[in-house]
Image (tube, rainbow, N blue to C red; front, side, top):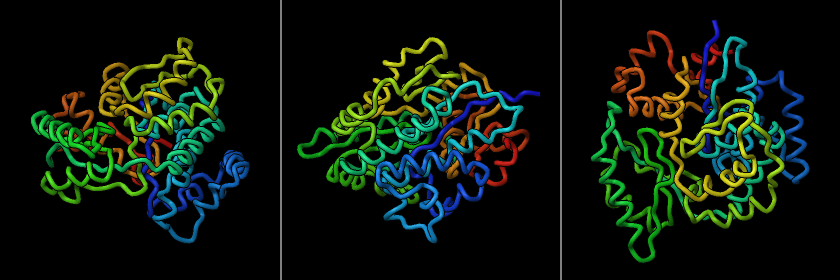
Length: 342
């Protein structure tokens, strides 16, 4: 029986110490593909992605850099997408933040090589510019139930801080039960001082710039200058972007897709929660598959499904109960779940 699935591609922050060697462990059969990625890195005078994955030890100062982490995540996620079992029909593809670039390739709008070029180029440009900072803070409690009042209170605080002289702070990503905020050092410090600790949060994200804010306009402009519209082709499956808009096969304006990808997608907030909601309601999949590397995005997908009450999911306990009966969500970065979709 065919399993209808929505494919979800991860963004930055998902290749960490536990993921070192991911390509070698899981994708030794894709030497040709990885060699093509390595060749693109070599053209730019950069270390091969296979060498980075094969490093003797994980070095946070190196492996979390945009020009290092981005190609590692792309190669891992794209190779995972190629490894899915034959009974799985991908009915739509989406992604979180940088995962949008991976989704473009997984959904056929970019070739494997052009997807890698996109990710590698934007990772390098953002690392070189290093404009702003990011942090994460929860907007739900331990039960994962939506809390509109708490969210509204936090967003009011963000707006108030951003209105102060010499402070920049804005929503970067609506990530299920988390808000990813971006701004300058004073803006983040003011937020950290104003909110109570919640576990490790507010948590700053190392080597992350002020993604998805107007602070990234110079980076978007540089990206448009070096990544041409003719890289894009018609997608082969529907793509759901960071607004929840759907780009349909045979009906996509590829110039508009290029413009969104290197414009709005970089400089405006990314609504991952909305993207998952649209995926659930419009495509009614049997399951959501989150490619590796990493395991952190699964929680955001589950929280997004709870937020839209998909299949009667009301809280974390309800999700865990349903997941135990028959998985609604498979994270390929988890060894116990990966085998379910290979």
